[in-house]
Image (cartoon, rainbow, N blue to C red):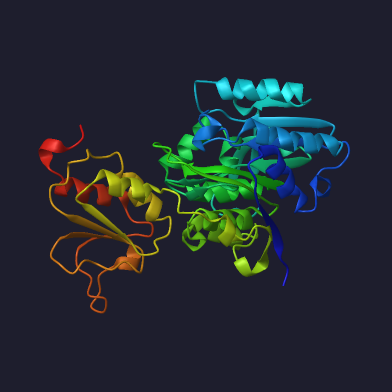
Length: 381
């Protein structure tokens, strides 16, 4: 049975841990050759300070630039499609890249090419930055954090930064984020992944970070995301896009086929990172969310539909929201919402409550139910 290697390194030194994570995979020479044109894509998302855990630290990226340069690369590019107005971090990267003999590319100012997929998961065509399609080696440099919809945003989700702004909005609007993630990775697979796990945080404010001082490396994005999820306390079996990516042959999420080099997952793990459900539980004192191993069809979407849609004090009576096949209802009379087909009430399971059908569940129906239970004078305008 073939295996893939994922490296895990802990070090306070950003440069040292990036180098060690790659060394444990066999060194940069296994990926980059003399004369190659290399694109390095760090996650710079909204331009927040790296200390928030939202973005990759420039020093971490520059360590990879130095290794690539040493391997004899002819051209080294660092690219991202900024989603923010403040370009301070982008400008810092631009200056450091120039000093290191590389160049910084703003994908929003460059062409995007349409890629036709022969065997897509969902989208027959996707648009990707031309630089990513024309480079010889694509090095994916994500951060280590949870995501309100996808569950985690690490290796596979980082390719979202290769597409135009309007496509990002489209995939969110039609609620096909995870499907898009899979097809983007089919269109442009990563040749090497090096995760900046200095901090771990949640994707949306408040950025409640924890310091892990990790770097995670690999060439299989499914394996890297599987290990990364375990390290930050997310069950990779609940991430739909990982299951879909494995189906399409993009990698493995079977821990029995993943060889860990360096720290073990147990040694790397410290505590669970904050998720969208944690934020909901803190915000709404009368809402009890019972998660019974729900997948991202419920976990992210239900939490996102709730969080921010209502004021903190809108629910005057106790409300239980159940999701996941192993969710156990309360042993008392209360308002109960059963989310998703895995909680469909039947004679055999005896479940009682307001049922939101679908897999994933119908969010419009879910919001209508919440509206009916919310206090009219405290609804968010």
